[in-house]
Length: 105
Image 1 (cartoon, helix red, strand yellow):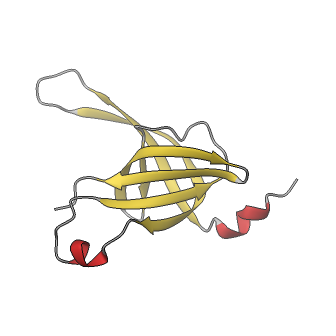
Image 2 (cartoon, rainbow, N blue to C red; image 1 turned 90 degrees about the vertical axis):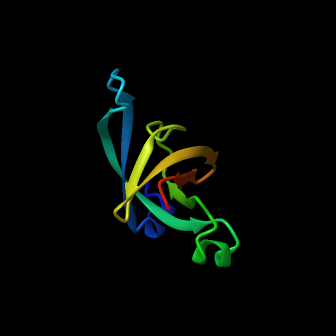
């Protein structure tokens, strides 16, 4: 059966899982899991605060087909940026994931 939402999923995102390397330096190992087709949209409010540098996070929403590899705590890379998945909700037409980029200055 053809997924009617596939038309809207024109972006892609790579899913990664990270784990501590176990040393005192805080190094992590990053494991690539898969690439998914999705629709990526900015999420949040108060554009003026972000433009002036008050916000410390940049948040996006990803809409994609249901996929158990998308989990809270995993990372996604899209548009040259790395985000941590903070929430995943299952809807009738797939998943909606909220992800934050926390390294924004």
